[in-house]
Length: 258
Image (cartoon, rainbow, N blue to C red; front, side, top):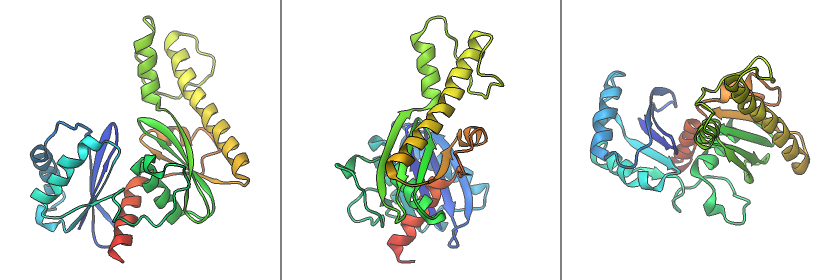
């Protein structure tokens, strides 16, 4: 079985795949660089036991992280408790199978490359992948699966928190889809500004990217809030919350020659 670990700025996702690529279990933890490998092992082994998965069943592992401070403890977790040496997305010896058309390819977050690989595996033609995470990222992938660049905007929850922290009279509000763009109170006005503002950004930025790229493009959404936005605009054709995990599986298979 394969243990895939996707460590983002806010959450770290652990998933176990069987040899056919079926997800046997998926668990989420807040990203905390101070959490030790021993703490992760206690937490994860208990959750795995609910799915009848034992540590000895794990024969391989792969890690993608955008938080460098997480890497040591996650590698220690794999080596100490699962007895496997994990593949690390971004290491020179890990073949991603794509080209990165940027001035400084090493600056691209591992999650963005993994998403590009997964999107190309699932869909044909050029595409834009929108990831609704701590940041909202827009990534352009050409018809051959190569990474061509993109855009980074503040994430929805980050924007709401910043608004609350910076303005004394603005409360902390939950993200939601307002029925109307014109809010009749502070809370509804904030929700409208964030939600419909992000819809406007999604529609405007994807259109601008298509014009610059010179062709129509398939738009795929992923991330925790993807479903909320995907159902509210026609520019998003597909929503896949497991896109990053699928990308990790694809990279593992490529580097195992299977």
